[in-house]
Length: 319
Image (cartoon, rainbow, N blue to C red):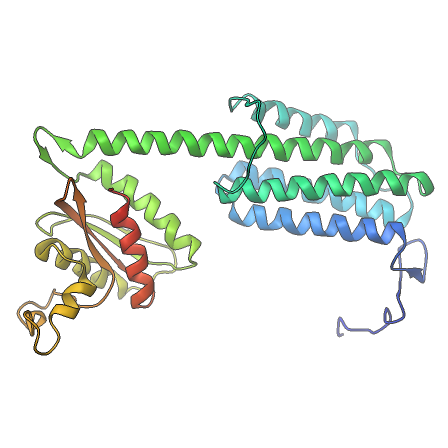
């Protein structure tokens, strides 16, 4: 059966209780705004990494679906939220408030994708709360349902600030690791612990681009330190990423630049014929510290431009 019924072409829709209600009805508007909120919460759930927060968001979606049923049916005796539902979200608010340092300033969003989506959800939750109050004047809404959206916006604010604080701490720890672990006496080195930090950041870049790639990190001699195979990456990308890292390390050049230098008539023409491991297309870059090559990164999984963008991002993490 098609979802296109054409029954609403004249501006009417059906609720569980009432048939042929104008789409401009305040209840229909509220249902649409709760649906919008649930959709944004679904986006947030798909993006957030912490399983505990995913579970919390899923439970919230279930609760606001109950409110939708109440509004559509006009039956607060059958569809309602309990005091326990309120206590649960209040406890989550307290938990997250205790996990970040409060700041007495206006929050400008955008530094972190997850917290930014949370703040969008919070703004929509506030809009829903205002509409609930308007609907309640004519069509009474159960008390716990009215309170829930107020608590929900507080939960989303607190969780967003927790994410921001966690990201800030992580950045400081990573910066400290880079300072601590690239120094070994007077010689700069790329070791496994630093490699793990770089792999994590590079994977986030690839994830934002929607690309499952293989990430390879090598030391300054081209010996592989670590390889990360993202879920969904092509099996053939493994050897290519490793060879890109090897190539960039031994020639101290990006693989794309090496490819340009190996074109017909150029100084390194035919260099790729001297070693089967040499790659002359984008996706490999040397890693430098104080202008000295300490390793390299190789990326494979996208097209040449995409691999090169991710690899260059990885190289710039050392600056």
